Image (cartoon, rainbow, N blue to C red; front, side, top):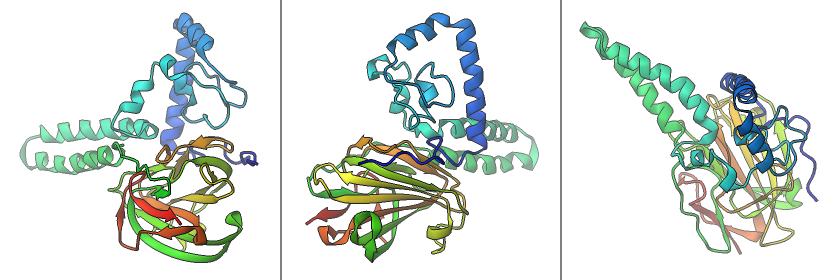
Length: 307
């Protein structure tokens, strides 16, 4: 049976952050505006809303209000009733749209300003231009083709395989396990995907430090989100994913909650600005098909197969 959501997970981004706080403040102003000037819209969205908003930290007027609290309540809108569904078709991570704008527009303005200066100053425009390109590149969200093989276990993250370690015992799996660690640089896509179809059984969030993800101590001391799943096609078989912050990656996003079903390759969160992701599998039930140094892609690269 799924465990309750831990008390310290009060948001899909439990670590907070400055951009997060700004976005929440903007949400409060937006809701005040809607209630004052767009009452018919608010009534219509209330009629179309499904589920229950109990547990949400603020009013749920339209789907935008669920961005950071979808794991706190059951409120939702059918896809055909969601006027903001088009945002999911953007080539950028929806969880990073605020950062993209808060960092992108000032960098663009600075680039244009410096580029129009006289003398050698215009050449300094290359610095904010490079930073702007990296911000845009970091928050990209490309389409991925998910393998259809019934025994396939796909990568939960983009990056480089940094570790394939056998463990004598892993409590959640109640037996021996194999841990596959993936290092994500600032140049990788940072969306996390479900390695298999399954159901979330348990979750743990641990605040911590922000050591470089290449440092072995980071797996123990850094902030992380741990998610335990039961495989949908193999009842009783479990696996786990751990999102770990890094030196620059200080914001973990996980939109899951216990009891929630997921599909293989489904996007469930991201780690912002460089990190590590681990996949823990039952050792005797799988055949690992990756090795240290391999370049992998979330939701697309097969890391292992069930025997």
